[in-house]
Image (cartoon, rainbow, N blue to C red; front, side, top):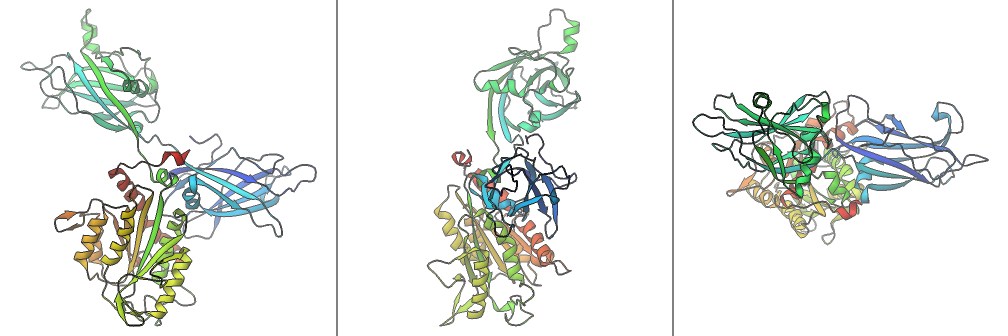
Length: 567
């Protein structure tokens, strides 16, 4: 839960992962003569593709300190695929004026939310600036994902001596679980399978999210009905019993036995009736009324109960997982001469080329999750000097020993330099660079490194069979592939590599995971010429699948976040 006074986004916002930001400042400017400053922090957010800043919320004012630790938190919706720019302005409140902007300005800091989350342990310190000639101190930000009851329960139950309901045979029992609501009603949340012709069924273990079972309230009533299955759907009621998540969880250390019978479950509202801690009633109310000697309609025993956490993308990033970003750019002749305005590589003094826009859109978000900000960058489909040899994985910085560039600006610089020195040629082969990154990904498979390869291309792929083989092999490794198609070409072949509909296969082998995301850049171009908006739209779509792809790798390898780093 957020602390009292936590600031929520405006109503109507699209829900994402909730992240709570805690704010502190150190060594603030002292603007008061007879005491220390009385600081407050105002958070501004910037919409995707917009340059306008809007106030999101404020901390409380803390009197007489240059090193405040604010209690009020900022709760934001976090989206990995968006560049979420934040601005923190610090003011000294020394009057009763409600207009904080008329108070003494102590400094400001600009940061992306992804930078905070991508920092070690989700902690980031940034210098405050904005007061000429003054050292303004620093702002410290801590990002924590708010718990949304992400635990998953696995349990198994059996029953003994249930009432016989069928004339020619025994009962065919099954269980129905209900979560209680605040208004005293119940919502069905699980049905077991039917076990045929027995009064002593043993049901298969099943898994259910805790939020589905009790909405995160461990003392909320969970009602369980026992039925005898009938083919015509008129299932016979055997009995019921009530429990709670907290009571069920005790079965981790001991069996819990419930009597099946009446109970008028639900009379007590969301928390239901008081629950007997030893043998909660699971009875049939109609039989109880008719038979004075009625004891119960059988018993249900909880055989096992275990809880596992459903880890999120943020858990792994905070646990130290690094995203390693690699770029591969198409240098084939079909792009056109870079010096001509019709070329897809042409960059005018006023705007970037489609290749540079795609690179910046994706790279500027991913770089927040890579601590060293060094990115290997390759070209393919060009003839290299001095002998004109065709290459499909040449380093853009012309350094085969160390193809990494410093930051996205370094990649852009090397890309533009390569355009001036190599000859655009062909064909369009993806497999060599995919295998190159796969080789790096295979070196570290413990979950501490995850590789993202961005391929930007203009045309039809020439080595489809080899590329499929490379993708199938890479699907077992910690890596994802983003393909951005630029220009007017048809990209049907690329759609085939994006395994959303049909999983990619090669020579009878299917990809373990869907690791490819393809988009045509033309679908995201803002026709008014707003390049910032075009990049925001592109990044939002191409990066949206990365968190789930990372989680799918971790889950298939049973890799959990490094908890030691989360403390």
